[in-house]
Amino acid sequence: MFACTGYAATAADARLAPFSLDRRDPGPRDVRIDITHCGVCHSDIHTARSEWPGTLYPCVPGHEIVGRVAEVGAEVTKYKVGDQVGVGCMVDSCRECESCRAGLEQYCEPGARFTYNSPDIGGLSHTFGGYAQAVVVDQDFVLRIPEGLDLAAAAPLLCAGITTWSPLRHWGIGPGKRVGVVGLGGLGHMGVKLAVAMGAEVTLFTTSANKAEDGRRLGAHRVVISRDADAMKAEAGRFDFILDCVSAQHDINAYFALLRLDGALVQVGLPEKPIEVQMFSLVGKRRTFAGSLIGGIAETQEMLDFCGEHGITADIEMIAMDEINEAYERMIASDVKYRFVIDMATMPKAA
Ligand code: NAP
Ligand code: ZN
Ligand code: ZN
Image 1 (spheres, protein in one colour):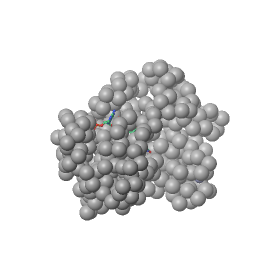
Image 2: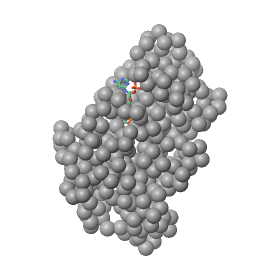
Image 3: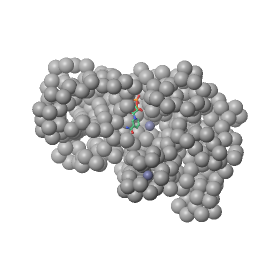
Image 4: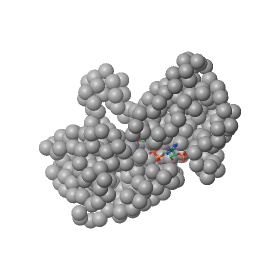
């Protein structure tokens, strides 16, 4: 085992603070990555603050990891020292179940091993994420970041990118489809960029009137301020597909009304509390209400390669490690343009 410095929450109401953590020594199939940057996902906040059940403390969040390969095990064939790589929300899965064999490791039947807050191996209690100097990961769960993409701005592709890419692909989004994206945060802004690049007509729904101009700059063809009830009514029955990326309580029934016959609303946002669904707003037009969890490993590489070809990355605000607590407050206030990314060079040298 070797020690490195990270940032951890030690309780639901504690501010994140420097923390010394152990990583396993790389095994034959492992890659040790020196982390250069880590994106800040709203799931990090939900977990660190126990807004979802089951947080294990100390909690080191972070699953939008990028960096360079520093060491490889004897049997590693996919990567070599110096390669530009990433790690997303998963670091392993059973590899045998029907989901794993279908490349859908995120739906692994016994449960995927997530990058943080999952049981760990090698004598370590639970997994620690990317708010740290280094990480050790099996080569099969390491992604290649296309050369030419800015490493820091590519970090959010590892969660926000794949989480929006996967449902857009699964529901066959492309030219001729009318897509709505709800919430312009980390996920939402990637959803807009990717759906536009896939050729769809994209409408952004935002509660923040001051984001309308940015929404258009990011590629949205239309922007609707969702607090404007008349503007929402005017959109009724228009959409094939709506991707809801909202992190907090909101009226989802207002969006069902915007779907056409057989339209689908896919929820990727994971608010803390249950949301009420008015059944009449679904049955009337045979609408589908579904959820989607990140994406598989092969699919994540496909998304990264697509972003490499199209020059797509996130719009980021770079922060120092010790600015993380303020960044969380700004995200909760819907004030991030449009993903915070931690510059790991700012990590204190020893905790
Ligand atoms: P984020 O950057 O904080 O963005 C969330 C956005 O939701 C805000 O920018 C805001 O957009 C909107 N919003 C916030 N509070 C709202 C409210 N009370 N009413 C209406 N709209 C509100 O968060 P994120 O990192 O994109 O994550 C979004 C959600 O997805 C989180 O719950 C996260 O845990 C979840 N997530 C799920 C998966 C998955 O696999 N399914 C993966 C990653 C993240 P406007 O200002 O434009 O309204
Ligand atoms: Zn995430
Ligand atoms: Zn499995």
